[in-house]
Amino acid sequence: MAARRAVLHAAACSIESALGVDTWAAPGPEALRGVLGAERATFVTLRIEDELRGCCGTLEPARPLLLDVWHNARASAFRDPRFAPLTADEWACTDVEVSVLTPCEPMRVRGESQLLVQLVPGRDGLVLEWRGRRATFLPKVWEQVAGPREFLQRLKLKAGLPADFWRDDVAVWRYETEVITAVEPDVITAAEADVVTAVEPDAVDPVC
Image (cartoon, rainbow, N blue to C red; front, side, top):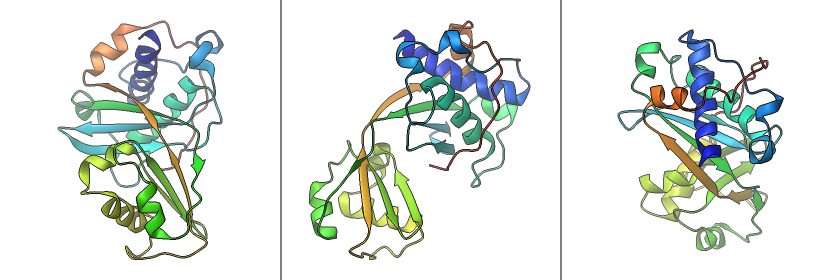
């Protein structure tokens, strides 16, 4: 439970420090212990009144969990190209969701029909790549589609490919997520004021 609060706290503090609402610093070495210091890939999703307001993340673990959340929260708030940068007024009513990914697992499939059979609705996140074009959907997207076929069609469109596209050299990976959600930014930042200590340089992360 404490680790989940620390994850939400890092996301909220990252956004508030960038907004100038407060002077939080990124997690320092003393906070990066145990599961919080393990290298994990994460996505941070922001919503206002159930409408998407930003979503950025990483697919491969490359830095400690808390630092990945810190950077992805800032990217979601201010560098998602689909949205204008988040404002302080918007932040006051923003819901925060952090998805912690399991390692991506390559899927060995012979054709689209076999992929559709293997997908598990509600559980699987999916990465699709073809000759430099890549996109991913988090498992939460299953809530917005009728089933595997629509899930895959929308993902191909997101990657810039036709909905009916398929080639033998299409590569796919799946993963699962642990989702950590909060709807009250003020409560998040007040909960664990001691989990951040040292300034860390910012980074731009790929869009969800």
